[in-house]
Length: 357
Ligand SMILES: Nc1ncnc2c1ncn2[C@@H]1O[C@H](COP(=O)(O)OP(=O)(O)OP(=O)(O)O)[C@@H](O)[C@H]1O
Ligand SMILES: Nc1ccn([C@H]2C[C@H](O)[C@@H](COP(=O)(O)O)O2)c(=O)n1
Image (cartoon, rainbow, N blue to C red; front, side, top):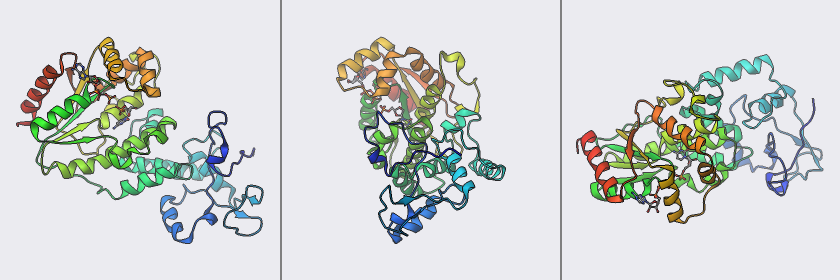
């Protein structure tokens, strides 16, 4: 079996742009203080954990790369870990037994969209947790997100007040209108990803789609518990939620024009069964020219994705069309090209009509 190149820590890989991301990171248990070990065991249930090393000199707390002899007492454990790693290459293949275990584990994660999109879009809380666990050795922040996620109650019930979500491409006016609606209704305004994890966003935005979207999906589940609590006190306005995660994933994982999207009614357009549902989802749309003007007027530096969105009209179309195909709840489209005051009036009327306010 060809052996992977080993770096001691990701920070020792030097310039990230010049060195390929590792296929897998190996976790050194002996360098952990004893009190941290139980937590690690929890994060790596049987079958997903890397088998750990020993050092040549016998258990130094901080082995240097030269002193370290990686040892995998059961080779199939390493193989299984590599195969299960979100960034692993197709080699080496898992043994049939491990393959069956892994398939069973994924089945236990409940339904998600079938095919490659299923991998990219973890559409249930257990699948989100599994994906984050798989990368926690390489991205410690995934562990921090997991810790927060695990503190959220599994089933979240909405309170008696309405929950309204705003969706749309960047610069369509979500921040502007959500602020006005919040003030008008005396509502609570929540954003996704929620503040408690948004500090790690830039880290996950650099990752491949399955890990990046697992972060946003985790954010949705964490946000759901905030929505559940807030909606017992007042109406809740939410800036982006599950539809963003799904639409951006679908658009990123497909190519070309909208004919290449999964067909209407595909499972990928369904709301996750275990995620709190809003009462109303409003999709703000503006023409590409108006959106470009607003982006320009806002004067903020564009993220990589925003630059891609501007340059690639097919990508934009795939996102918007994916939004339109979402069901239960579907998005209600709002033409957000008029003035701020007019958009606000339209939106308020829609909320009052749908939510009996
Ligand atoms: N109806 C409108 N007419 C003209 N300009 C608007 C309108 N709504 C918002 N804008 C302006 O467009 C810019 C983008 O708006 P905003 O930040 O609310 O968009 P957004 O959808 O929240 O973007 P992002 O998703 O990137 O956070 C801002 O400068 C805002 O003042
Ligand atoms: N629930 C969410 C929220 C956001 N995202 C992703 C979608 C885009 O990649 C990006 C846009 O965020 P913004 O620039 O408007 O802050 O964040 C997601 O996938 N799921």
